[in-house]
Image (cartoon, rainbow, N blue to C red):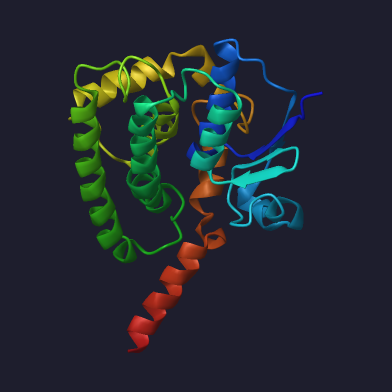
Length: 252
């Protein structure tokens, strides 16, 4: 009997990568084992629980358990699912290396840049504005550079690595989708805009985006949720670090 999959996740770009992968595999007819989805309440610190830490030593979602295998890091999980359940989402041969370089590009550049900008624009209402000027400017400039790179790559292509939808698209899309949350202007990049809409219309993508989300909030947070998370900066280690650093500077 095939071992079931247990996915520990939340409604975040990194979480959506894996849920979209699962739904895209289903969409193209790949036989998957039963899947248990465990939603992790990251705003209430459930990622620090012993149960989740046993799955993800880094205490960040997502985490995956498949038999004796326990995996953290979304891109590692995408590669594992791609190898374990072969499909066009994770091609073989030379094409795989093309996909892997864009997967790494997302993990090393796009994700951290968009994610850091998002932290300051959406979750740090409790941090003084003067402490946010430099990081907001820095991350916005880098985001625009990365968008120019992606726009050039997408020229004349349906998807990032050609005409086939792959895990490179799956990894990149959730961050681009949240451009309004990060307050990053993507309108100067027509190829990126067209690609984003093309990916968003895929049935597997739509189903994947529902994982971990509250009913009715799959595409847009309620005003109540926005208010709750906007004042949630105190939960974030980066906020505490900012506050402590600012205090030390003031003392100096």
